[in-house]
Length: 319
Image (cartoon, rainbow, N blue to C red; front, top):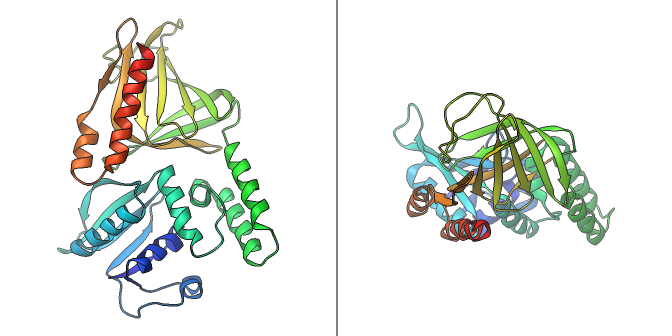
């Protein structure tokens, strides 16, 4: 199989391609310098970043895409496939799949990339996060390659920097809620009202009518939500309040480890949730979605099991 890769994950993914006995196709100048081997034939699979940089598009004939995905799932075990295989217009043979990279998957990709070249801790987390973080990483790694910096000092510096990266108090951010069906739900604007030790609390107004999903509690004018987000945690908790500050219910969303940047927070929603309407017992809802995704080969079994473990842990904590 001949694979062409473009984007911020290219070095890590091409390392995986070569480790599995496949070939690099249509390499860039830097890829030629880095790997020194490639095919002059057209690619069977083309891989490129999605617009938000937290996932990749995999394009090719269905059998080649499936082979690439199996290789990806073994080499980057926390990869999550989102949405459905999309058949491209005007082609009976070519399909496109989206592979989403959670925080754990990004760290697995870091390990692959480090087999090829200097890779600072949290490389892919930073490259995907924002242009300024991406430039900072590229600059530091260029200095390392030229021998102008000591790797040990740079690695410590990056770990410390990323560990303190949280939105500023008083800033307005968005929460990017990626779904297993491929949709990205952008929640916000949300104002940071508290932060400390890798945790932020944000406040947002609730607009529209109807009832709160999972809680079956009516929405009312003036309602607001306080969401607590903890870096690396596999759940978020949102508490809904009425205009006079009375608690209406709590919603615990089970997700991949929370990724926190200065202007937004993101994660992949794993489907299962815990809800507790005010004055009632907590319960686990939406258990079918992760099971179906796992059975379809889209959600790794170890992530599904962890999601249910987290949900059970929350139930114990609340009762």
